[in-house]
Length: 51
View (tube, rainbow, N blue to C red):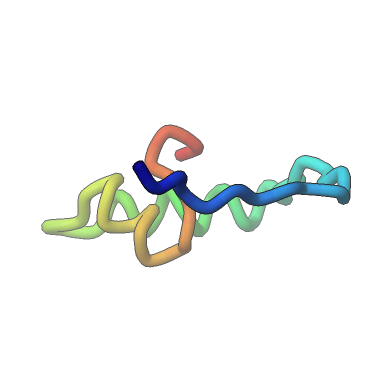
């Protein structure tokens, strides 16, 4: 049996804070015709549940 890759995280990352303008821009992208939350989140490199 082969074990998988193990990653050790030594840094504490802070939560990213978004400005009101950044939030509005993301919501505007979600409101575009044919846009999906999943598509916008992938484009931004985020997981969809953060939107």
